[in-house]
Length: 351
Ligand SMILES: Cc1cc2nc3c(=O)[nH]c(=O)nc-3n(C[C@H](O)[C@H](O)[C@H](O)COP(=O)(O)OP(=O)(O)OC[C@H]3O[C@@H](n4cnc5c(N)ncnc54)[C@H](O)[C@@H]3O)c2cc1C
Image (cartoon, rainbow, N blue to C red; front, top):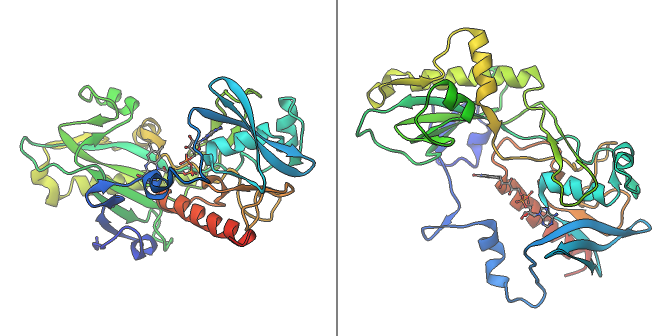
């Protein structure tokens, strides 16, 4: 495989290649979106951060968003917006808040006796996530060199006819496995992460399966229902089965022989065994997106300016607006959405 200098760039368009894993680090310190964008402004007069505060709904008068209703330490409070409300509550909670505000599929709202403000059937639909396979692992001899988590990331292609990569193969210096795989292959005690070996986790970057977020009930404290429908499209399953074999051919290659005493899992041969392993090993890459997608079709929720269709003064700026999940980790794209939102808001008010 050709080696690239960075994960972020031309490698993302190539059919095969790898690079070192990348982290957001400045002067030897991990940097989060909070530390990068907010930490230096905590004392600014035009910023108030309320913790332990749950947004219940957006308040709407006529077809205009007027503020948010919240619960803070068990007490209800109302905040009114002089200009507009911007929801950045992520692809799982944003559709929940929209539905609790009366914005969503009419049938779904009626099911929970929520008064409809705007019929937008796409709210909560089009849920996308990258499936992640945890469980391709090799035992290491004592004294073998140890790598970090996600030390190397390869972009690969499950189908030779597809020019762009659709797989991440992520190398780590320890073993990762779902509880089902750990039980089936008698892993040592641990939880998702296991010592004594190394392995590869596999992410599917261009899933075709689509899920849905719905309300459990009309209580803002209830968790929404996530129906991820992972692997509901056979193409996704087929791509991951190819990927597992790619990982196995790398792990069992002559070049790595001196670093392992043998394959711990999956080590399978029949197609039935491979399918059953995949079902045990599948989980989330923690990249939920696309539940309030940007566009102009019947299932879109926001326009190009991030404004919710049919409601004045309400924008969404988070992973939910992505029409399609990017073929990459999602933090960077979410930061770009935030940056673009800030440019649009400044342009709207001449700031
Ligand atoms: C365990 C894990 C590991 C990850 N690792 C990586 C990685 O290595 N690289 C990468 O690129 N991406 C990674 N991601 C994905 C990345 O973190 C997300 O794609 C990104 O944070 C999504 O941004 P967002 O703004 O859409 O939502 P979020 O970052 O989820 O922000 C939503 C915010 O809204 C708040 N909120 C939600 N509902 C309410 C409410 N009702 N009232 C008040 N506040 C509310 C939440 O508390 C949260 O602070 C990871 C995610 C997870 C969970």
